[in-house]
Every structure is written in C-alpha cells, then in structure tokens.
Length: 297
Length: 92
Image (tube, rainbow over all chains, first blue to last red):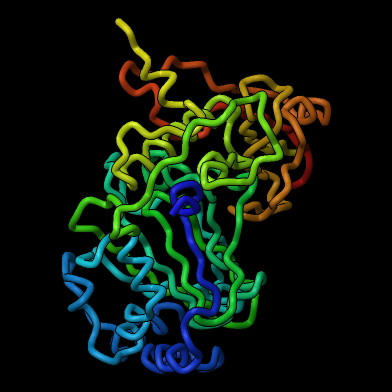
C-alpha cells in the first residue's frame, strides 16, 4: 500500500495463467495480423463478435462478467481480488471498460496516416477528490519494448491536472513503459499520468482496461484487523543511515521528474493520502505536516 | 531559401537556466524529424544553460505566480517552463 501511495501503481507479472489468456484472446477474436484489413474493421469485428459484455456504468463488479468467462476468472484471481478489495473495497462498481488496441506500422502505411504515440494524459477529467478510483490493466499477450507498451510516470497520481493538458510534456524524466509477459496485471491510481506508446513491431498489442470506483471510504480496506500503527518520528537531515529502511522511506521517495520546490509538496500530499488510507488523521512522516500545522495564532 | 522554426521546450528543476532538465519536447518545423511523446528517455541537454550554449534562443519563460490562498499545497502542472527556438534556412 505504501508503494501504491508513493508511486500510484502496482504490477503483478505473469499473474494470469496461459489458458485464461488464450480464452480471452479467442473471445475477442484475436487473429493473425495478415487477416486484419483496417483499424476500423478490426475494432468493428471485435465489438460485434467478442463476448466482452456491455456493462452499464455503476454496475457492481461482482455482477459485471458472465460466470466462468475469462474476465470473471481474472477478477476472481486471489491476487487481483485482494488488490481490488484493498484499494477500492469488496463492493466496487465498474465505471467503464475498454479493449485498447495498438496497431503496428503497416496499418498506418496502408492508410497513409502518420503513426504517432498517444500523448501523456490523466484519464477522465479534473478530479480533486480525496476518494480515488483504480484502473486495472490486463495484458493478454507479451509486450516487448518494440510494441510500445503503456508509458507511465510513477508518482504523478496526486497532481491535479486537466486530462490532455499535460500532452505538451513529450518526455518526462523517469518515464517508464510496460514491457511484460502474457498475463501481467497493472493497477493504476486514476490520477496517474500515462499514454500508449507506438507499436513498431509486426504484431497487434492489446490492453484491456477496467476502471473501478469504491462505494465506501478507502480507509484500512487493506488491513481488516485495523492493526496498522504509524512509525514514530525520526531524525531529519542529520540522520542515522545505519537504520533499516522502513515504509516511511517508500512514502518519502522522490521521483526524477519532480521540481526541487514542488517535490516537497508532493511529499506533503503523499502523507495526506496516507492519512486517508490509514485513518490516522494526525500521522506524519518526516514532520512535513506537523511543521505547518503548528499554527499558534 | 525559406526559414523554418524549430522549437525546444524545457522544464527545469527550478526557475533558473542553470537547473537540470526534468521534461522536454521538440517540434521540428523543418520536417526533418518527427518528434513524438515518449521518443527519448534522455534529455537533449543537461540544463537550460546548455541549450543556450548550443545556439537555442530563449523566447519565453514561465512567470513566478504566488500560490492561491488556501491552495498552497495543491500540485499540478510542471512549473518551470522555458521555450527556445532555432531558425533554420533551407529549401523545404
């Protein structure tokens, strides 16, 4: 949870088994690249024939997917279920889902179109809530570097921006792209900055995404016995490096893209986020909030 | 001979050209190179000053705007933005 609070993302490599990956690909009508004519036709075919259901926004996740369908199996995977329960609770609802397909160069050449990566963005719209949604990303096939896997920027999830208004940042120091084996699951905080890369391979790249909303406060959902206790204050600046690393080191991690000044605000916002996730309204890490809350007038 | 503009946008770690580059974008009006999101993991220059030393002309820099009262701890866009240009002559 500290990792999620700090970076805004979690990854579970090769979590979904080969058989379920195959069933999912069969369901969506995955075909050899040579048999697909155009981007539009390919999407139209998948939408018409796949067993991915149309799910009205607000449907409980538990009722969303047909029993024993590949997506049902994915969401019943104990790690996926545990992560979802920890982040958005066991009564989460589906906001939307979509099968993202990134096409290889030859499609763009055939259509005489410029092949461009997707610009950096934060999904949906300006979202100043303390409540957060999560987006689950499922990769049914291997994603190589050449295939332009989802680009993301760890630690950006608490910056409040307006969707594509961050598109002007072509490259951001510390940017990462998902390169993974089949069956990998990623879970993003809904505020995490991201975008699709360019697919320079010969193969289609798939990413199935589901956005989930909580219906309850996200306080200690990950600690049902409510045992979590914040760590005591530690020395600042004149520190003892011989001490073991703690979760406070994860929470106070800096990211290479952060400005020198705003980096401190980013830390303050991680502490505020951790207060919400733990229910400890006065807890602090490295005195960032205690210092500015010591208002005597 | 026609002239075309190349634009380099650098986002720096703090509001001085000596600061390290943390984000960057390039738009090439000559059409020689198509830049796009995610096309490079390494900044074109270590600092803003290095861009000047390589002949880029600064034409816009972000202002220092005090934080809105009550919103002092809200974080949003990258703050320290610098626009540079180079003009290139050629037959385009």
